[in-house]
Image 1: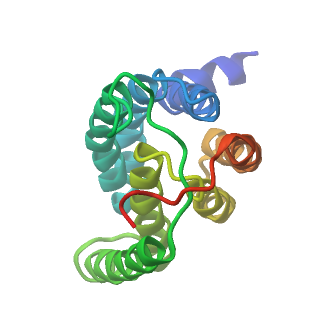
Image 2: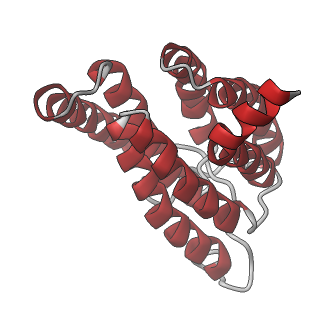
Length: 202
């Protein structure tokens, strides 16, 4: 019991972030507006966790999440572009937008990898850069309620399990295992509800 209490006292921020992170995914699956305030708070906590662990790209990603949470909150509150009285609808990724987002992902990956490798002491610049680049794109897709963002998350979450295991972030490893499963559930739930139209951006 003493060891547990000692561990909790040294890792309570990470543990709280993990619990809120699970709540964030649950609200995302349900398409609840609570997705964004819970996600914002989770990100604030993880800025600190990743700073201490020297996962600088992930720390920067959490800062991005704070900003994108505000954007997503606004978009979901604003509602459908054609009728603001209706909630924003789930859409499918178009070929054009998918190509653009692929190019953006590759550019972000190369940029982040270069910065981490040359200007930080990150021990895993390539892995950290890849997870960060794809997460940036996936979160923007979530804000626009594009179905395929769940597929990106399934890959990123499963990949991140190994990354966080390497960094000995046990609560976060458990969190990302749960994330992977919940992302699959989210994809199935959203796909069941999604119409045939593609994203208006594409």
